[in-house]
Image (cartoon, rainbow, N blue to C red; front, side, top):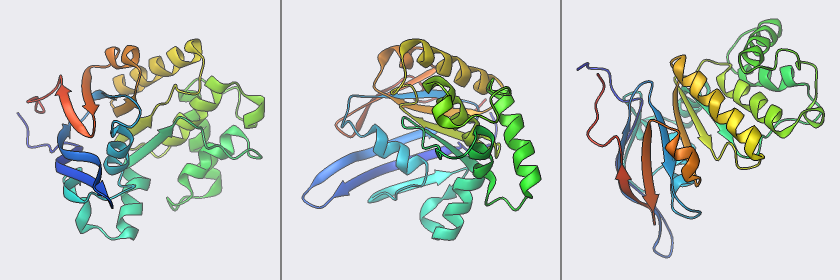
Length: 232
């Protein structure tokens, strides 16, 4: 055992909206360093709400969210922005790349708020793209890349700041099956390098390829293959 805290902790978290609509109900979950976790559920189950709370993109109605031991509720907007920039990388189904920028400039934008020079940003971006197998596509714009390549650019952008956590929301949802398999393989490789990765998906096949599977339905965690597991 170690005193290392979970990288993400949800403690009896609820997210509700006016009219008695609950997106998440009394959810408790701990994600430990270097875990590879799939949160699986159908559309509308609450899994994307869970990711937004994990990523500090939203705040819970009740309960506590901690990132690397820090209670999110105690952080103002400026410090929350710093947490997202320094500790969390995001990958979404839609790639959110800037169309007129090359791959290397899209990735370099992930370092805009890190206080380093433009030259250093581009150098780090090139390294990140090489890590995801796109070292030969630095100067290509999004329309010149395949869907799988664009998702790899998005993953490189998420990784360029070397975050402790990568959160991915349906990262293969806009891809064909072959490209999707390549992205899942890449996530496994990044995990093997030490990155803590949590993927939100409705695809049971993807979920089975991950070490830990958390099932969510109607805003409630119904099963967790890692329940009771603590850091070794």
